[in-house]
Amino acid sequence: MRAILKEENLLTVDEALKKFISSLPPSLPDTEEVDLLSSLGRISAEDVFSPLDIPPFSRSTVDGYAVISDETPGEFRVIDKVSIGEGKQVKLNRGEAIEIDTGAIIPSGATAVVKVEETVRDGNKVKVAKRLRFGENIGWVGSDIPKGMLILRKGERITPEKIALLSSVGINKVRVYRKLKIYIIATGDELVKPGEKLTTGKIYESNTYYLASRLTMLGYEVIGNVLVPDNKEKISEELSRGLEKADAVILTGGTSAGEKDYVHEVIKEQGTIIVHGIKFKPGKPTILAKVKEKPVFGLPGNIVSTIMISEQIVEKYLALMSGSEAEVQITIEAVAMSRITADKKRFTYVPVFLFKKGNDFYALSVPFDSYMIGTFALADGYVGLNPGEEVEEGGKVKVYVRRIDPGPIYIGEEEPTLMAKLPSAFRRLPLGTFAALKALKYGVGDIIVVSDLLDNNNSEGDRTLERNIMEIGEGDVIGYWDWVGMSKLVENPAVKLRYPSSALNFLGKAKIFVPHTILNQGKVVAKEKLKIFLRNTEVRKYLIT
Image (tube, rainbow, N blue to C red):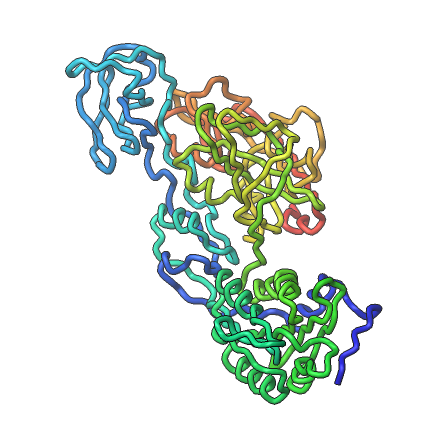
């Protein structure tokens, strides 16, 4: 029986997908724990937090000599050497220097490292001609990722970068969702397999090859890939076999109004058709059905239609079934939310966070050093720039995308009492007021937290939170990235941190400034008001107080 699809009755792609999801809500598969290397491409079934700081100890970022910064310039007596990988505990006193490798642990008492090429060595003496700042050429403990930071979200696909990050914090097993099993059936008397002789009236079958390779690449297990003629009984037998073995079945061909288009008849006999026909070219005669409480997709036989409908509907539904959301592997053009610059001498990759508003993308670059695997892994993509190239704010830039995350976003000052209220679906970008003001300017983000110490616009938020700024310790002063509100409290700090929580690593070693909501010790030296902008009414429920 022919299936006549009237244009006035057809749904859009979005409407069809929503109706199908409503009629057959995707159910998640079981979970299993796998070795880290076996987790590539799998979907995380739980949130994972860093059990330690990255770096786990303060380390040298250059080959050179560890010294006490306030004694430079000067001549020093070389008393020892610390090589990478050594756990040697050496105490550095005034007038002394310790030779050190890139990546080696900073000796006790040392506050800077001078590059070897900027020194003159004479026996056990080394001369340093320049003034070194406190912390120069040192990668401080926790400066990349602080202990307790969310590094892998439930529902996130595990990439090589995430495996590097997980291994760098000592994690060797991950809980993931079981791979979905997919059964693919191609129908058509005109089809022959590649490699066989092509006779008159026949064409090579390509739909199953595309679907099997694409779905395998996306992390699914294709357990059936069969070709059947336009025979109703054989199609019915193969559909039943697929439903017994797999979590979902995909058929191609036989969904339209031809006399031999039996797929819609077979599906009706075994289950229920939820959608037949969509307002989409190519791909009009698409079928979305429920058979034995499992999803069955009937795709048009045209290969382009198969590709388009697979991307627009099938992959999105399967992603929900797998515990993830559909990923898009593309290169996009985005608006630079801040100035992006390359190294003057080298081709540079700059990690960026991506935001979407309407049909436009916005890219926020962040300061980055080559040892920061956490920053690189958590970013959404990267920009490639030629030596000396600059992109001004507001300019267009090409972004190599590793993911586009549609989840709600928290961006701005790090405030644990706010962030603790948010579910794991939230992206947390505690990058400071600079980033928050850019989010306000370009109209992106859902919860935006601005410090009045850096906000010159006197704007009012939907909520406010006041916190005391505590001064703790003595000696060299630890300050903050210019993006952070508290950076206004410290002029010419010895070290600039990205996250206030990282300052706790300097307790007893230097003078630090932290909000009382992170550590309520020391003396109050300032007041800070956080202005909280709720750009999405749905997020208000998380910040009731």
